[in-house]
Length: 403
Ligand code: FEO
Image (cartoon, rainbow, N blue to C red; front, side, top):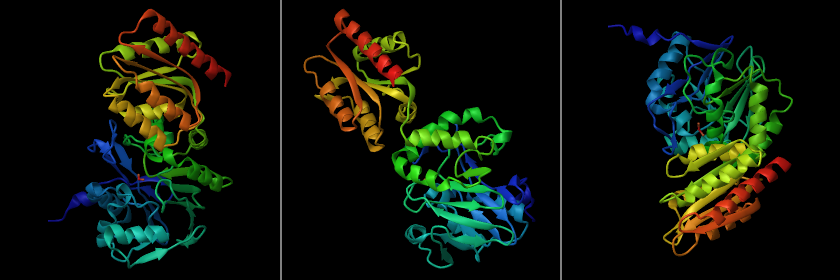
């Protein structure tokens, strides 16, 4: 019996002859098995139909069947000539083998590092085409130009530019968590649901690679782009300037006025200190304050706000002569990302031996942050230390306003 479902997808068009054939994943709970996906994620793939047909990236293997159906609905039996591999992480490369089985004459296009990974992940060494930085690929009426942009987010990552459509296929750069809700072009959808999850995506996935991102932004200067097609989230068209500006700020670790207070607490005493510091910050004239108990909020959301705001305060109870594990883990994640340029303070409480402050301060010193001060309390929070916490919050607010 003929399978009529194969052509049921209406091709979502980006521009003339460029189609969105990506998929939504609303079932995966943890991206990279680490980062929560309360609103899902999209794996974006694009099909350019010219005299030659090029597919840009694939999708997670779990959704290979859907991308195949979408491609077929566009091509109606025509074949694909090239698969451009901008990134080899399995959320995008996972369906390469399946695509090649369906389109056996397809040529896999990537740089030397891509081809090495193709061999390592899939044992594929034939039917490949190596390109170098600046090389072009002729599709007939349009040419694709390749920019090597290593470490956004792996060593092999590159971007592909379609000069005719003025479309940049940017790989992970400029991506966002969050599945697409019926549309892909930013002109046609509510983008407000993506901004926070774009920063969370940046903080978790790309944030460590600020310097490579700055280099890539430099390389893109002067390129006349009308569309940015990332591997995750919306296609940017009317918001390109805003998206580029946000990434420029984040890659320079430029925080906006505001304070994250992240703490670990066992019986609420350190938490009372956090509340008092927050009170001081607001009284000092900085209204944006985010309090996070590290045991309650996933670190991805805390990291996201740490990338947003210029002030950070970290506190912990002393636990087994050390920090609470959740606080220690958060500090390691910040350290890994090399976050720069923060106004900082520390606090903590203990019952018989104070250790937490001694552990937190060297962390901030190593990152060369501006340390405003610290408060430590033995056992319950008492009036003197309460006032010190409020005063510390006010001092932080003054520093932030003076920046
Ligand atoms: Fe979306 Fe680095 O992969």
